[in-house]
Image (cartoon, rainbow over all chains, first blue to last red; front, side):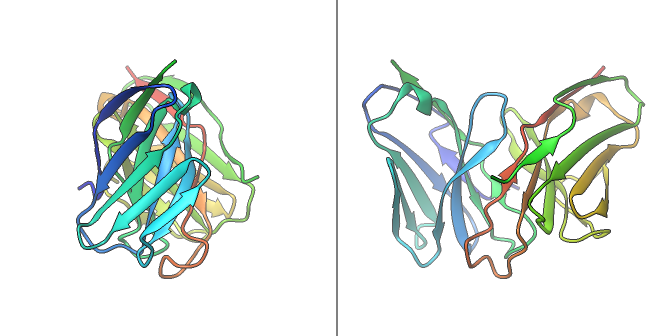
Length: 112
Length: 118
């Protein structure tokens, strides 16, 4: 079963606006990560937030984690056309070496 | 930069054929993974390996097997391809980390292999 569920499934905004995507998960985690996937390509790691962290920034990315609600959000500020991609959250609820569990993704479209 | 290379980007195979998908990573990572990605289902873990000659089943191992004879190479095998195995297959690798701490279980993905079974 899927651990992470992203919301919304699809999001279309104008270039320059901020984009917010949410992720909910079911079990306790060690960390949560966000990945980006351009159409037909592999996934690229964006940012990781540990279970004892509440907020993390990286460039135009801001991630929050609320372990009490088992949810995370990814904010992309000042969006660009090149941000058009699918975004996935992933958790390592398995506890270490045996892979991450991915959600189904949010497809983000930035309108120029 | 970490590089994970999948040997075939696009394959078309017939039902019943044996299919090999090869993956090589160049960063001496212990862990390697095979996922498949389908519309509406996201990524699902098929098999993973945390050492040479070691393998573990993921969420959907049925119809697949794997081989890890060398640390840098992880092969996914479809013994008898079926149409429901038409999908995008993603290989990935990461460092072996205990407890999910440290720099994090960041996974590095290959570009994917599109397999169509007809």
